[in-house]
Image (tube, rainbow, N blue to C red; front, side, top):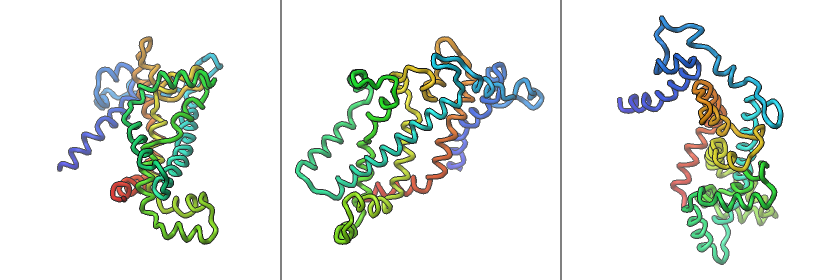
Length: 274
């Protein structure tokens, strides 16, 4: 009974979102969910919000359609996920399998850096991005977040479970250090890789502040920034906003269902290793 009640509480907002995305403005303000059967018609329930969402709009870069912002977000989220997966897993492997002077101090410094709120670093980061000439470039979004300290510690915990004998056997067979990391260690931490990919993708997909600050050309903006314009100071198109929000959920949902087994087992293994 408790699980059923929890499921209702969790699914009710999503059900409201789906219903509201297909309602016209008047029905959206009057009915919480769907109108009564006697009130349902093409006027109250239709695809008008989605048609308005994909209507061609003018920008400084020319005509832009909504799917362009979807592609922008997909590109940035995918690129950020791949780069973070590669660099964070390499860092985690090094922390788990190599001994070097200052390792403990480095780990403490990295943990301490995670305590600093990201918003505090926005001003110095803006100054750095400006002098590097990366304003209005996707490099400003990809490079600063290319290494995840949190991801490095997740992979460190997972890499501690890779047998040292396997690594030594790879060295005896003549494998390079990169080959041992990529061909021997990474396949053994596949669940953690899946879990981290999902978290990294969601982090980049939902990012709002960085694209809003560093990207100046409208055609290069991402979904969260564009959706915010529909409920800003000069526009209150709630139906269009909810339709766009519904579409924005689709790619992360597909990725979650594709990686749900890795996500659960990856977080579990990371919690019990080391």
